[in-house]
Amino acid sequence: MKKLSAAVLSSIFVISLTVGSSLRVSSAVILEDCSCTAPDQSCSASASCPHGGCILQCVGQGDCLAECSGFYEMFGMETTLQLQNARYPQLVSELARISGRDIAFSPTKPDSVFNADYKRAVLWDILDMLSDRGTVQIGGKDFEKLKRIRKALLSGTKISFCIGNTPVSTFVNDMASLTGLPLRITSGRPMTLVNLKVQEVTFDELLVKVSEQTGTKIIEDPFGVQ
Picture 1 (spheres, helix red, strand yellow):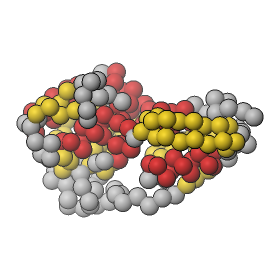
Picture 2 (picture 1 turned 180 degrees about the vertical axis):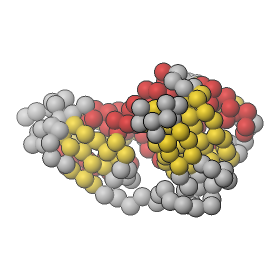
Picture 3 (picture 1 turned 180 degrees about the horizontal axis):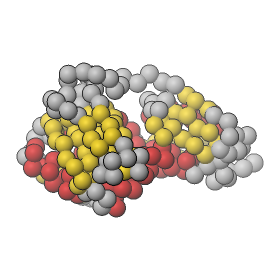
Picture 4 (picture 1 turned 120 degrees about the vertical axis):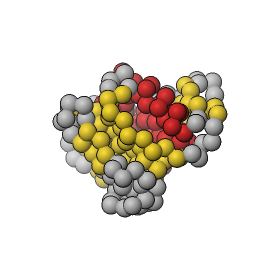
């Protein structure tokens, strides 16, 4: 019997769940133009979310991403899961149930049998493990692109951002889950809306600008409670 650490990419397993938010034209976003263009001009993104705000990131080399606010929070979810003599469709089904998102996985070895024992594992880490063994999509988004965006955020790469009609608490939770950083708000009103469009700034610079615009203080605190 093969363990989950065996290599994975071939047939596709797709689990569909209904997702409440979607990207479509709406006047809900306060910013008149919620869009961004990558510094290298390789891609751009724009969006409006009818039930809330949006967070757009344009990194470069074709990596631009638009999501409704709250999309990234799931990546920080703690996951406890035990499977015995399982196959990938079972694992994908459980992860789709936990995340509330559609998940597609194309493993290198689709017939692998494994045991899985996760105790308070972060969902991002489980998806990262799967992506090393095949191709993962979550919520219709390529997980490899999400990994590249995380790397850009953490490396100090200059990125263009647009955050519209998003409570600063939601923004912080989204970014904490996307980056893996222990971000939290220490002062100010967490429900203050972020409406900000900036070009070619690092992630640290973005946090400063969000804090200034909302009158809050956002810090990285490994010992704090988010």
